[in-house]
Image (spheres, rainbow, N blue to C red):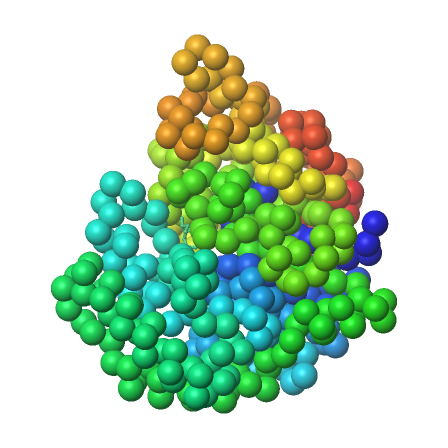
Length: 425
Ligand code: IMP
């Protein structure tokens, strides 16, 4: 097997991938984002200092690691430039260590407007998007009217193509809201400036990664969102618009499928989701509120409160299968301290039938009843645990039950937000 590794979320995002990626980065030379865009918010806490990364790979917090924004990313130039500036201000060295694919697709202001208009005009099918224009950007990519970064850098071509694309977008916008024509001159001038500012970062990352692998470099592929938000395998249509599972790595990073490497699935000790869509194990009462507060479950990108629920092993098993996950990292186990009992959903009840597989029909998922296994909780604070044997026996038993339920070994347990608050199993 390739010595690379892909780190992916096994839930609806916000599994704590940022921390695990940061932890694993030491063993790798290159960190690559391969899908999603500024809708992602990867939080890493180092020495009490909190970093939230949206477009820049989490590996940037380590010196001498090459970080790559791959071709599968929806690339938002002003947000990228702002993020780079913020990181530099916080003392992070960004020189030749950050590269952007010339094949990544560019997010424009009309994508964000269309994202919001689609949501507002779609009361029956509201997705609860982050409003970052991600869906409309990928729509244009598929509809063949998007812009690759390489086109943005080709000034004359960009100005020509923007004319007809913007005409089309203005038509769509006025159909949806009857006003607000976007100005060609403003966008052309603004994006010409961004083009010059991003130019030093842009390169052919397909060739770069091939060369890196040839010289023996190890690559870590950083998934964003989670597999249940994957465009093909998630809870469609309540999904993001990219391939958020490991299946997205080859196409989104521009590497051959054989180079995906080990797949490490990240799962939180409970489950959360932001935005709309069915959520069988959701806790809407006091318990949900408690998990939200104890776990700081508020969106890193939008600040929205996350919906919280018990661990759903049916959903995670589905995610693990799609990804071909080799092992799991379990995060936020500390958040469950103080619970009298903890629950794992092992199957769903639906029309007098027991379902052990995650249904493709998302409507059906709204009607299922979770079937739980209940385990005794623990009172102890576990942030200082550094070995599995330091955990209260009930916490240890819960981890073992999760492993059985999802048929994966847990290799890493995160017991706090700091880098060192970790157990290697
Ligand atoms: P979009 O990606 O902004 O189009 O949003 C589509 C769905 O994915 C919404 O339910 C969002 O809340 C969700 N989503 C997008 N990015 C993230 C993320 O990084 N973490 C968790 N949920 C996300």
